[in-house]
Image 1 (cartoon, helix red, strand yellow):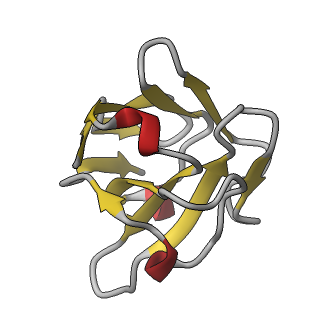
Image 2: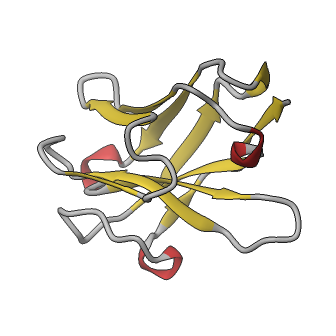
Length: 125
């Protein structure tokens, strides 16, 4: 089994920055692609960014391109999401997800095998 723990969320003013971390433990050798999703109040969970196991391939939702950067440190079993120029519409519960079969990240929720509990990001205007 794999456990994912997110951290780094908080309250920030519009235009500010936050860095989220997703630390994996357990059978981390079984983790391939990893992604960040988010769920805003009253909305469905949506894809934010994904990264391949090697870190060489990254995908971003159009809404965060140019503002967010996903990266990973496999030696630390940790994936990061650097969020800059935050907007009130980025307010959501952010989840880390890991896939045990795909080497390239997928944008669909159902393709991921492991999920963290989430970390809240609130952006004030």
